[in-house]
Length: 123
Image (tube, rainbow, N blue to C red; front, side, top):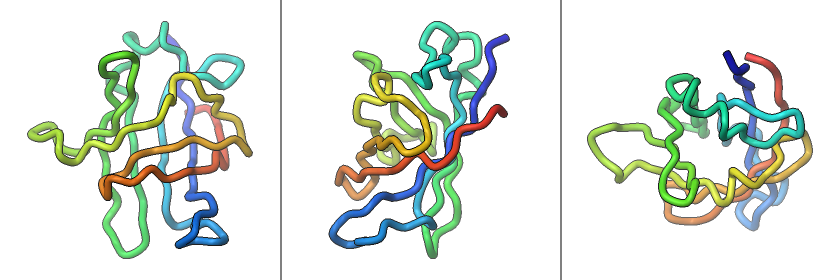
């Protein structure tokens, strides 16, 4: 059985947050290759374990699934009854999830935000 990694992302610097925001981010649970890329070959075997928890100041945490869509697009789905809540990762399948690297997510405000990979550890 492929191993799942727990990935912690925190909001990187942007105009509204010049120092970033360690209270705004995600916990992702995904299979990764040795190089830190999403292991798409293992995905189908562990699909049910691919999940997300979003945290933001002043909001309850949101828990959901990570889904693969057309062209390998990954989205965070917090409510199976609607696509309205989905957030979309920008080229996440091409990114390396290693501490210090950056990834982008189009959040529910419709804007793309950059997040820094803070930690990656086995689940």
